[in-house]
Length: 283
Image (tube, rainbow, N blue to C red; front, side, top):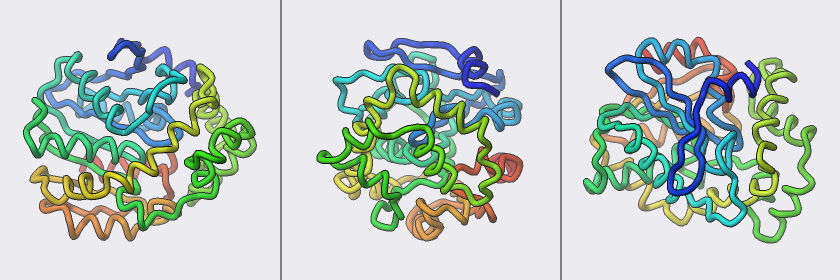
């Protein structure tokens, strides 16, 4: 599927004065909301959406700064604000009861939402939680060199300016286990969405989420330790960034969880190994 095809499947909704791109498919009674990863978009789920939409009404939005959503230059891109946007979007869509799935960057937006949920600060019933390959335990994450450079206030802006498709392609392909699954055509479509609305000019601002994971560590890991929501930890074992050790530690911390490993798969399991990922998520 091309980026343009994906764009045509979705719609644009105004949230707090910014335009958010939203995929909303399926008509079942259960609703699945998805928080996508970095530096990609809702497009990560194009292979699995048809199967997910048979069981759920599936709602995936592009976080601000990502994909087809607005990418304002003057914006914090704090994970706190990304959580505000997600919750307001779901409210505007009339959601009151959901299953929440999060991957990568989205897992930190998710833990901020959980922190509020635990304190009964939001009017949203979360029936189930599905966590996929995210570096919530940032101290265990094996960050790529480009991530370290982008998150730095000294180097971030310059690295973002110098980043091109070749650099992007190399870095994304390197987090796959089976590199042949990161096809040239698919990587180009992902890159087109990153560049949409001058996205390269904000990518270094987005990268500050890594610093926030340290700053809010106690709040967000604490939220996982406190939650009573039944949780699936669906984790690709060969992820070189959000390593499997993180999943094993989460399994000791989250009270009501099931750890489901995905073998021979890297950081983007829904793209690299969609059939097996679906089996674990829907099973």
